Length: 115
Image (cartoon, rainbow, N blue to C red):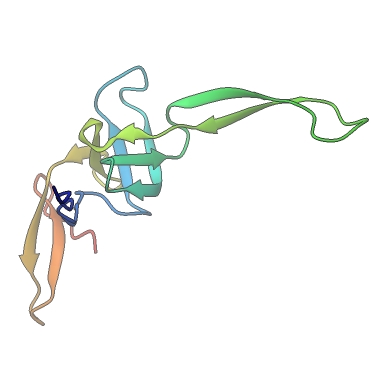
């Protein structure tokens, strides 16, 4: 019996790399940071300064000492909201068209254009 192929659906998120977001759930609730990386297949984002994890690294060569490395871990995209730096408020996102006909992202609370 032939195996079924997985449907290669294009996952889309409401945030992009470089966006400023606020965490709305979890232990880092209320923190604001920049999106460093977006992982659409797992619906996760990497936010600067949020969800910090400590990792112990063994020495790789003789004479070298081990290290304790702190790094950001991914957060689910549903736990972050776009954040307006001007108004200092988190908001949902919508789409609108400019006068030139270009589709842009807009914050619903403030009307601020993101793109």
